[in-house]
Every structure is written in structure tokens, then in C-alpha cells.
Length: 342
View (cartoon, rainbow, N blue to C red):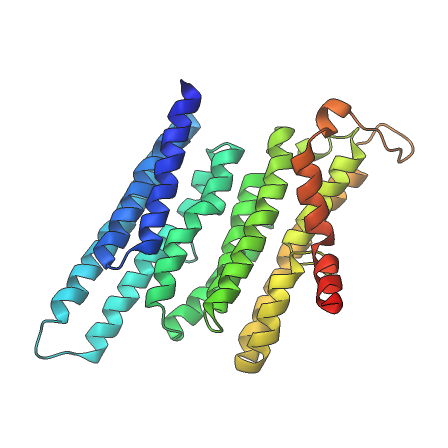
């Protein structure tokens, strides 16, 4: 019964996103966002867990506020189009309000304060949905209405800055990945300067790496930094895969996570070099706290004197973890070989 309950809400969650993506009107996009919201709240709520109940209430309030602002801005834009005297400044403010509502749903800085707090009250599967699937519909709407101006430039700078600085003082892996997601939102918004296909490529690789990392953390039930070297201290190969996946998510070459950043760097170097240099410096800070996780998990609190490969078959026999880790580690090398071959 519980599995059927989950499947029903996951299907309506996907349906809401598809309605938003395929809608021809603003009202249809708003309806898809509401279906998506009302389907995700029952997935967050868990029995006998006050943190998940708190997270679901916070998520509902924030998303309802963003939906109200979004609907208000849509009504104002439609009514303004029927006016005789049109003001350019008023038009600019309305689209800024519309984009602010979508950025609040997305969790981009400076509208990010709800995102790490809510993700702390979820389990890993719900966190994975919030960091990957729940970003699709707002990003698609943003691609319709975005105009690269000073407002979006400030959002990109703040997202990369707060996403990198905010993760430095965290001991919770969920909050670290949440701030990393805010940093990646800044990079995704910068891809709209070039074209939408680059955003699709960036988002697919980011989602693949996030799913790969969260599948390992969920399998071993790891939520804090100290559990990294306490719970999987005897399985060095899984720990090695997890560390390399984190470095790949941080954008370290030659891993797969460097490929979308490579595309953005190549295109932004011709358009906005100062913005690119700032984003690269902030990404180096995110790479620092990934290296801190890697160092603490590999070097600290191991009882064995030598680095021997000890594998537990019950824990390691997971084809999905092996496949995703292999692709995220060797993805860029395989891509380069295929490009040279063809």
C-alpha cells in the first residue's frame, strides 16, 4: 500500500513538470507548478518524524508564496498589455518580479534561505528529487522570460558566492550538497547567455553526478561528515568512488563534472570575462570543501595500519553504484576518445 501511495504521487509530480514544460500559456505553466507542489509535499511527510513535517510545512509556505507572486505578475503583465499607455520601466519591473518568483522556487541566492533548512529535514531520496527534478520546471519557465540584464547578473554572482561560502562551515552533507546546488544554479543561469542546449547538457550531467553521490550516501545511511569515516571505514573502494564523485561534482578535470564547466568557460571567455573569473574563483572554494570531505574520509580514524582493499559483498554488490561511479570518473576521458574517434 505504501509503495502504491508513493508511485501515485511520484507520477503526479512528473505530470506537473511535464505540464509546465509543454504549456502554451502562463496559466498552464502555473497550474503545472501547483500540481508539482501538491504532489511533492506528501512525499516529504513521513510518520513519526517531526523534521519531515516541519520541512513539508516550510516548503509549502515558500512555494505557495512564490506561486502567488508568479500568478500576480502574470495577471499584471496580461492586464498591462491591454493598456494604451505602456511604460518601459513598469514592464521591466513586472518581468523582474516574475523572475524573482521563479528564482524563489528554484532556491537561487538571495532567495535561498529556505533551501538548506528544508533539505536538512528530508531523507536522501527526497533531497535528490528536490536538487534535480524540482529544478526542471522553474528553469524552463526562466528560459522563456529571462533577459540577460543587471538583475540576472547579480543573481549569478550571489548564487556562486553564497553557494561557495555557505558550505565552508557545514558538517551536514545534505547542507553541503544544498549549497553546492546553489553554486551550480549560478552556473546554469550563466548558460542562458549562450544557448539553452548548454543548460540542458549542464543540468543532465549535474543531475547524474548528484544521483551517483546520493545513491552511495543513502545506501550507507550517511548524513554527517563524521559518519564518512566511521560507517564505511572498511570499504575503501566505495569510499574511493564517493570521493572521486565528489571531486567530479566540484568540476575537477579530468572527471565528467568538468565537461559542462569547460563548455561555459569556453563560451563566456568571449562574452563576459570578468564574470567568468569570479565564477571560477568561487568554484575553487566549493572544490576546497569537497577536498576536505575527501581528506577526512580517507585519512582519519581508520583502525587498519595499511591501505588494504577490504570489500563487503553485501554492501558493494550494487550495479547502479558501480556504473554511475565509473561513468562520472571516466566520463570526460571517454567523451574525448569518442570525439577523436569520430
